[in-house]
Image (cartoon, rainbow, N blue to C red):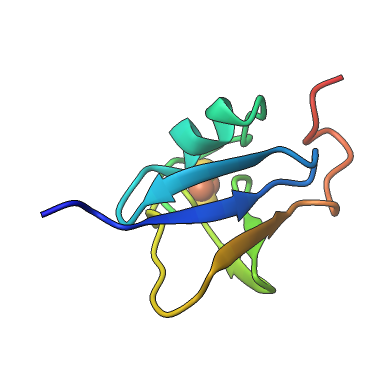
Amino acid sequence: MKKSKIKIKWPNNIETYASEGDDWFSVAENAGLEIPTGCLTGSCGACEIDVNGETVRPCIQNISFSNIESLNVDFTSDPFWLKS
Ligand code: FES
């Protein structure tokens, strides 16, 4: 059975597609972005991103969706987020 994919809109205006359970870090890399990390255990918040208005910690949460057409990712609170 083929896994369904969802469109992800990144703050750099790149759109990528991902499957349920994909790793946020890899999908961000495909969009040319690097999610910063710290503890990698879910406690420091360094990796936090906003996904459809909800805070996600990619080090402990994979991509998850149901009954939605796309995921909008934002990380405007950290000026060092985007690579120039
Ligand atoms: S890297 Fe620390 S919460 Fe994700």
